Image (cartoon, rainbow, N blue to C red; front, side, top):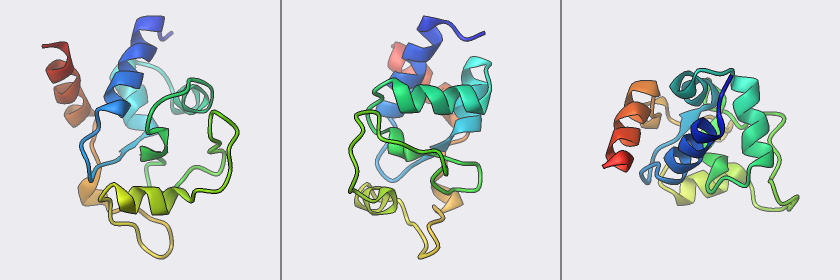
Length: 113
């Protein structure tokens, strides 16, 4: 079971994702030893900066994605594009820009220094 410290790591890693990158719920789940659904719930309820940069493994916005503050309006693919992520007309983010769990572990180590 993920601890409060683990969730803080998720929050910090997502906030620190380099411009032009995205990651998946599954990669974050593997980083802290929990499941993708739990990560999705945390993204929805945890007020995580740039939570919109966490996508499904296929590079799409999760059907259950909701802004933590309840807002509507801004389209996630448009925000991703503004951040330098290539997103197809079908709403799929470029896989070459994905940060996998290995990349996230390296980023977490940089944040710890």
